[in-house]
Length: 379
Image (cartoon, rainbow, N blue to C red):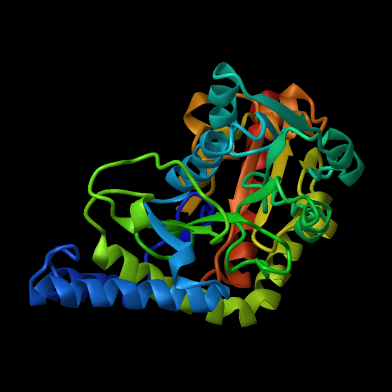
């Protein structure tokens, strides 16, 4: 099997699974319980929080465990909007955000907030001048995805942070679900106030993730109850998931030394696909993360390619896995100026550090054969 759908989800690391099982079996007490067994569970949870904080160069109390990217984005955006609504009700985001950001923005608009959606260029990148022009005295939040989940475009986070650093009443949120472990990021240097990531994107377990919330930021909680996670995310803590998340993050960051190999595979795919007739590559190498390649085959819908490759035991997706079953033209590609036909036919190859160049070569060979056969049928 060749698995090239890592932006949808990754295979859990064996060592991470072992850690999860060990903790779930031996430290099953509720971390909020007063007895010694509960205290041991709480100590282990705190240790995991400290480990993640150290790896991200933030404070332990700035790590809120969540169930993943969607919850993290909801808590960050709605939590901040409702907490600071008396300062202003204007929010800025981009036109190519993940649904867990875009739909939250639409909900906030229905509740009296004003949202500015920044356009992107043909490479899928916002323009800083448009951001500057959009800022007002009422702007309380700028939420920009670090790495686009469909085409892999990297936004200029450092430059955005520099623009916002002098604005005391404007906070900066980054959906970094697709970026963590793939591109380097210094949270403090980039003046990021809120940052979301999800465990199942880097070989941890589904249902795990975290929101980095700097200590100067207050959020209105989305989930209230027992007051866990410093009151921001009530509910019995997923201890085994949190420990496994810390383990997976450490292993992923250690793998950053292999980024050159990942880039080699991506560049090989970009070169080979570009040379194939009637192919359009939507991922621009100069501004792209090392693990995502998005392209369209003229005259063929994306799901046709996905299923044809599936028969060869090769797995890719049609752009975002979260909306792939709807068979709609990619909103990200349309925002980049891509035609409806190409946007509907787009597919995404997404890599992990476990993939190899030899797999990419097999993929290209099978893709060429499939396209040739499909073209014969069409003709």
